[in-house]
Length: 314
Image 1 (spheres, rainbow, N blue to C red):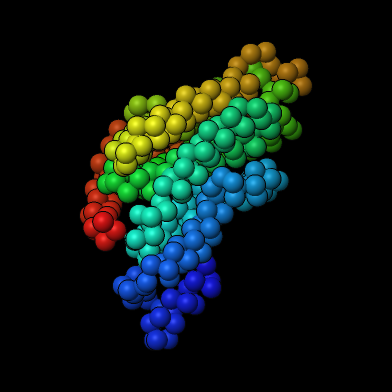
Image 2: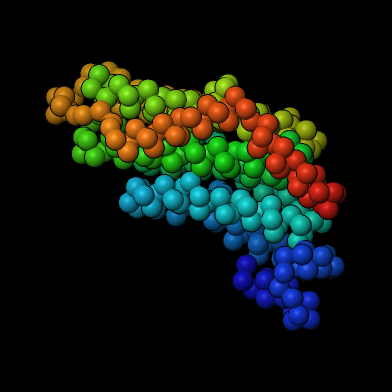
């Protein structure tokens, strides 16, 4: 990406590095093609998209919980933001030429991440793979090149950031109380931690896109955009729609393995959340419900910008 930026700067005659100037450059087809791949590969690693995702699960699992929340909630969105802010306006013709490849990579990530997440016993690693599935769908929505798809992607970038931070925070609380995040060693915590169980369930419902939660409108718009985006949109939407089914499977399994069933004898004295833990999780729950009930505010903020972006591409 740095090499591509230096090249673009040279095309201005070494005079300007502003976004407005760089995105107005009249690049040849060949130049657009290699600039597209230079930026796309960089952003695909950052997002991450399959098969450039291998750094993410280990990083999320071994990083301190605060670092994991920062990475998953904010930093990986920089890759998705880069697609919208840089890749699409810089190389519109190459986006039309190669965008379907990126869309397919995202959809493969949806299925791959979901299936792997279902088999994970480490709760943090499960959420890490679920994140690959979610951002894969967001990337596919961006490359559908439709108003609904891109607005859904922007909405879901915010929604995913809220939900995944809540999930990692809840898992961190469970690990602090019990000394483990292995699903086989947990269970029955709802009996001693009812407040955490309720907030955790609401966050999970938002993550799987239950109606009236923040994830519903974002995923609906993404799938609608993918459906109407190309001649193969129906099949792309079918594959993308598996995130609704598979996501519900592994997320409800996560809740079942941690909160339901027989409690481990060594965990019978764990205490429920209190103080700042209640405050943080309450704010996340409020945002999940508020955005789910009143999504139009965020959609109106992005509508005009997305329309201008699509006019530049098409």
